[in-house]
Length: 169
Image (cartoon, rainbow, N blue to C red):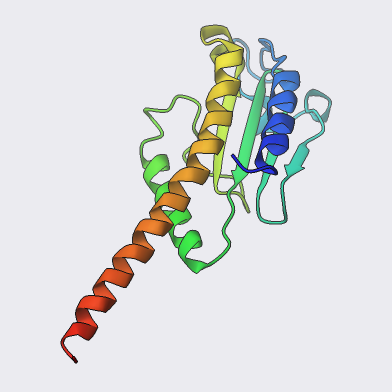
């Protein structure tokens, strides 16, 4: 883990732990309905101030809270075109399997790569600390995976180029 990643992840962890104080809140419009207020956005008094934690201009986390839900949107670093393509393909792969990940949203927020939605039901059924640990480990692993895929693609390209140029010698 790099020296700048640890404080960034610690800040995200502390903010997530503080914002996961969500509770059951019935809809004001329809009786016996419970919609995530962070998604519906009908009442401004039920929404908390969004928090953006940024490691650099490309890598940031948006945490939007409300009385009964929290939405975490992550923008992953993309230093070059290869990382941009790998990130897009990997996130598309993840979102196609959003049913397997209970808290993963199918569509991310604009300008972010992936989003999670945690409702009060999720926080009642799962341990809150485990939810935070999952998101932090996801952020660590996604960074490692994209770096490994980039190295793999570069070495594969180098091997292909060497094989191609062998025919000219």
